[in-house]
Length: 483
Image (cartoon, rainbow, N blue to C red):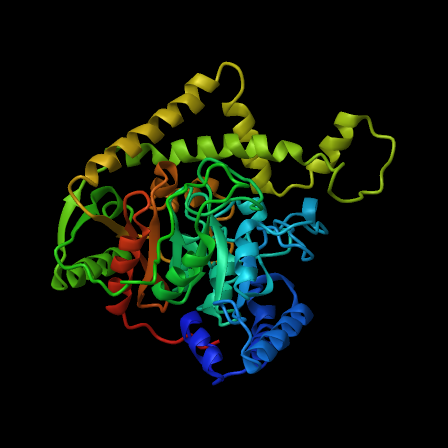
């Protein structure tokens, strides 16, 4: 049985009775047992429930009962998305044993379509990181080379899909956290338009810029999942009510006659030579298929990293104030503390990156510094959006490398936060502006490490973005993983 098939291929074979859902899920669980000790993509594996659900779906198929469109496909879910009855830890000691009493909206919608949640994927603590090294439960490793990071913060999601431990996954993207692991693990990752997918049940990090996004082997799989999880949600008043869009229909429309802007600031200085070469090759292939590619300058990107970390840290500091170790948390065996001392003692158990961002956020929001930092960051954000609006008057899409560098070794940059933050320079623009962006696996470096290409479109243009991404993925010829 081939665990490397796409999600859409799985649905087709399950529907026709070519494969048994129970057998496929059992083989997937065997695969997790075999490889996850090395990769550590999962924090929790919900094996028994997954098998029970698979048996139920097989019975429905045999008796020709109505079945949801997922037909029992096994999915991993980033462990900051609430799942009723399964732990949601956010990779933090603070939520080590927290079991959500409800499902996030995206989970409810997947369950209605008979998807199977096979487990919860590892991440940087509270989704704060770019490498999945900042997890209380230990780092995730890149399945293409175990010495390297898988990207982050949705590293467990990206690695689990790449290593055939599930058919697809859901992650969250606040500054590139879906696209970074998609690029580093050679899978597809979409950061949707802000408001396209409900955030209800996503544990908050930076509310104004984060989004849930699908990760899968193919663009078609991402489009399939987007059909299920997108749309207005009365539980989340930031979701748009745009009506239904079928993202799978017309996926093979092509890009002939489309204009693509090459973002000068994302392909120049500081970009690895092999990454730049792969991007230029991708541009050439798109031109050969009828697209017109022209250079586009977005000057405000120069200030994007500073603006992003100011805004994200400010929102994180506010959101994490709720973790006082009273309503949920852990027992550290000490009684009689004065309230502030008790909370301070509990919160000292946050990891180094969460602590760093909380302190930074509290500082930029403090009296005397609000105007100097936070207000300026919001002005940069507005500048970026204005420049993008102008760019999309001239072009249909924008293109860049997803990550400016190749995957790097575990531990290589962990002691240098600034270097880690700078790796986000190509991805944060989409979050600050709210536009959609997708990372498509395109090539491999001379050392066998994945390189992803990023495409952007204007707000709520996911259908067109997926069409372009599908064309780009069709031009690539990538090796199978051998793990």
